[in-house]
Image (cartoon, rainbow, N blue to C red; front, side):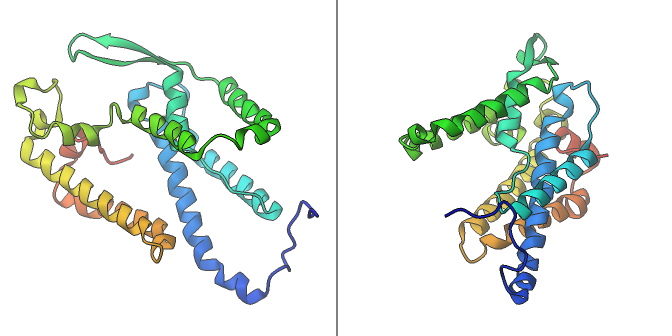
Length: 245
C-alpha cells in the first residue's frame, strides 16, 4: 500500500500545476522570510558570536533541501526560530553587569555537534511513535508555550510595553525612553502593536490566511520606506530596530 520515493510530476493535470504557481510564490516568500528571521535573531550582535555569518549559503542549502523534499513528496522545513534561540541560550554563558544590574552574554559555545545530536535524538524517536501517540496535544502545546515564554525575556518590544508607564528614574541606563523620550518610544511601540494585531487577524481568517506571507512582505515595506520618515536612524537603533547593513 505504499508508493515510490519520488512523486510523479504527471500525477496532476497541467492546469492544476499552473494554479499552484501563486501559492508556490507565496510559500517561497514565507520560507525566505522565516529563514532570514531565524538566522538573524540567532546572529544578532548581543550574542557575541565569533564565527562569521553565511546567510547566502544557508539560503542555497534551504533551496536544495526544499527541492529534494518536494520531489519526494515530503514535508518542507526551514529554520525554526524558537528552537534555534533556545539552542543558542543553552550554549550561552552569562555574566552579571554591575552597571545595569542585568545578566549579559559573556560567551556562546559555537559548535555543530549539539545540533547533530539533537536531530539524531529526534530521529531515534521514530521507534517511540506508538508511545508518543498517547501524549495529549495540550501537553505538547504546553511545552511550546513554555519555550515561547522563556524567549520573551529580553524582548525589547515586550519590555517597552511593560515599561511605558514606569518612572524614568526606575529605568535601566540606556533604556530607549531615556535616550529618545517617552513619546517616541510609545509611538513606535503602538505602531508595532497595530502591525502585530493586523498580522494576527489576517492569519486567523481562513479566507485570507493563504496570503499571510504577502502581509509579512508588506511589513517589510513599512519598515524600509515608511518608518524612516518618522524616526531617525539614531531613534531606531535606540529602539532596538537598527537598519540592517
